[in-house]
Amino acid sequence: MAHVSASETPPVVLPEVAREVEEFVSTGGWNQPTQLFALVPTAELLAQQPELAGQLDPDTSPLTPIAQDSLPDEELDRALAGIVWPEVVHGCALAQEIVVLPPDAEAQLTEQELDDEQARRFAAEHPQRREARLVAAVLRDGSAACVLRLRGNVEVPEEVVAHPELAPNLTRALLETLRP
Image (cartoon, rainbow, N blue to C red; front, side):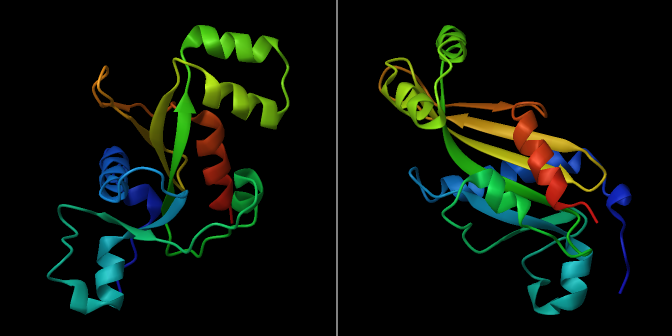
C-alpha cells in the first residue's frame, strides 16, 4: 500500500473538500446535528477497499471525507478534546449549524458579559440573526479551510462564503484532535 503523507496533499484540495462536505450535509436540509468527518487519502482508502474504485477517483479527489458516528451530547469543545485520530486520517472536518449576528449585535453581546446560556438566548432571539451551516476542515500540516452557508429566506437569498479563518477557534480545536 502506498503511503501519502499529509504534507503531500496539496493545500488547494482542502477548500474543495470543505465545500464537498457542506454540499453533502446540505442534501439533508437544515436542523441537523453537528457532524464530524475523517479526511483520508483516497488512494489509501481504495487500497483497503478496492470495491469503491467505481465511486472514488484519487486523481480528482485526493482526500475522501468519511462520516463518523454522532458526537456525544456534551459541549463541542469537550467532545473534540476526547478525539484521537489514527495515522491514516490526514485531516478532519466538522459541520455544524450556527447563528450569525450582524457586527453591531456581536459587539453588544460582548459588552453585556453574558454567560453561555444567556448568549445563546440573545442570539436566538435577535431580529437580525441568520441561521448558517459552518464547515471547518483541517489537515495535520496545520492548513485550514472553512465554508459558511447562510440560510436564505423570502427577503434574503442563500449565500455561501469561504475563507480559511471564518472559525479560528474551531479550526484550532480540530487541529488538536490530529496531534500525535
